[in-house]
Amino acid sequence: MATPFETLNDSSKEFISSTMKSVSALTEGLQTIANEAAEYSKRSFNEGSMLIEKLASIKSPEQAFETHNTFSKKAYESFVAQATKFSELYADLAKEAYKPYEAAVARVAK
Picture 1 (cartoon, rainbow, N blue to C red):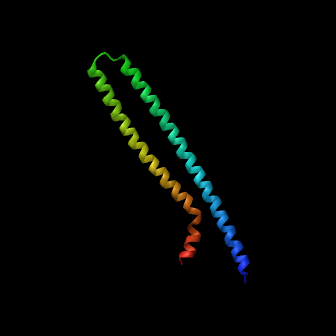
Picture 2: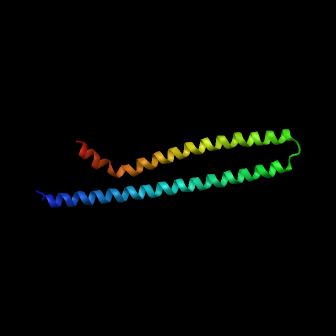
Picture 3: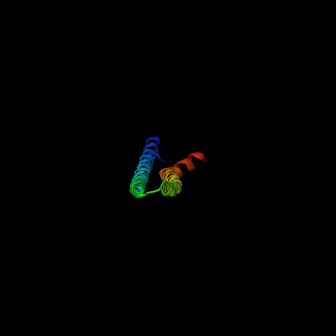
């Protein structure tokens, strides 16, 4: 039979192991999100720069309005797609960070 000290020691080791796995998952997930944000920022900046170049060469107000309207629609669609992707990444991050604790929570819930 295990002594209370051995039981506490084993529980502490399990908690530390779970915490390290969780921190590792958080680190990976946040790095993925940061990389995705950086790529999105680069794309947005480049698309904005191309719009300015295009607008500088346009001669009529109608063309300028149409070009800006097209850009705005594309930027909105890109933003919505990116926001959806970010929400999926954050949901995956939460699941992965919680996963190491599932067994311990299940034991406590019994």
